[in-house]
Image (cartoon, rainbow, N blue to C red; front, side, top):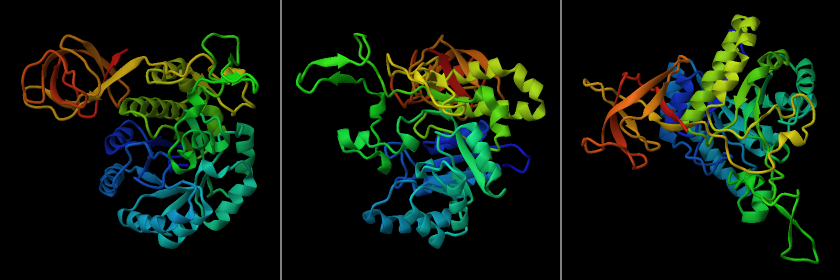
Length: 410
């Protein structure tokens, strides 16, 4: 819990740019991964230099940064982890997120001044587990996604006040218990518990009878097959009071491979919802529909409340496809503005002169503007930007502020 009595809003970041977006758009803390030892090996991840810059950026604004090191380590990993923690000690993250007891022991030895948070990968489902980790020196334990709010309340009643509870409240759900999945390793040789998950839970599956090879039977009577492992995304934006009442110290957003648009949208909306609730529960209640509308402007796979109110049902799954709902397309982040009003930005998706687009601001405001002129990477006038990641300059009908997100309705 923060000093102001509010729960911490903990937001993921896949890159230095996204870390800055998370901080500007409302996160109290950001969690990131380095090139090694986290569970998002295919994310962009951070170099040591980028980590240092990101930590300095966050600390200058009163925010914290946590680094994931939550793989299930093998013998071959231990020496490298020790060296990695020595490097992290020099740049000073606020916490390490760990699941493996051996890795935990190395962290306590090498950098005892850095908090250790126990990852959800450690299957934290009872207060006895929380007490065990507290006795070892952990400051925080991340609850398993499979817990109900009533179970979290019981944990809170049975652990010391200084031991914090962190809980996922938004984002993708894993089909396997606490994310400890073996499907990826079995099918592709890429181990989810070493950070290389191929997300086979999103694939299409059929049944095949043993004596009829090649005869694929749909699990449901549907010509398209079925996605039997494909969970809806978790979303608790309409249930902030229940999360607060449960005694959760940190509201965690999933998504260390998400875009800046996703991070900005989710961080900004939860920031508004939390702040509104602590101003007045009535204010929060009056704006619930608005929060849901805003948070649905980023990509998602429909929404569920997960296990918070009891066991999941068939309604928690999506059976007919594995695609995201996408209401808006991410165009870029506003950079420096020159004396003529042109804003520099890296193009994320194509747009054209004459398009009506939207500036998404950290304040919560969304401003509709027109693209009036555009200069390509060589400073030449152009009607569109067809090349991904091209550095362009754009003149909008209203000058944006640095770090405004530019998006367009899909």
